[in-house]
Length: 252
Image 1 (cartoon, rainbow, N blue to C red):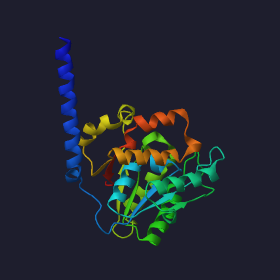
Image 2 (image 1 turned 90 degrees about the horizontal axis):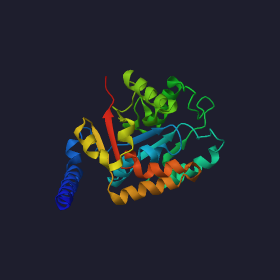
Image 3 (image 1 turned 90 degrees about the vertical axis):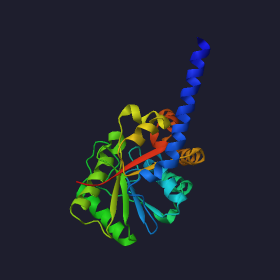
């Protein structure tokens, strides 16, 4: 009986492995808005470390295709008076993720403090993003969805600013906007096991890291030494966002 159970477990493991390999091979055919040549992309985040905690799969896969990605960070992450340290950590992390320092812009606006209970003004953020996009001829902007992955008010404010630009038809250069799907807590912390669930759900663009790229994503997170509390070490191994990004095209 034990041998039968072991054989069944091995068979299920093999089937799961084959399914994962199939998903890796087929992921591009499922993407409906895959950025192509000539894309000039912008990732807008709220705090230093958002780029690697939530968006590393997208940044690394776009980098592998040699598509330029700029990064606009709307605060220095100064909630615990570590803003100067965190700015340096962000630049180091971006270098690991393939974004040169000249493509990284970090704002320190008095009306955009790093604080989970402070509501950022979407109108102000929209104006700052629009100015940046126009200056750098951006035609693809990526950011959080309305739930901001972690529910952080600053994350959600970035989404509402981008949505405002989209709804008012102010995005320049026929720009598309992709927002990162937030998941429930269970899916958020089952890492690669979420891949079949993500694959079966509707999405517009999906990025999946292979093992060597995942190691690169971890290395980027290790650049944020000021933020590496014990639970973030667990996050590195358990969070789906370290290996999977699913984006939806902003629409009505």
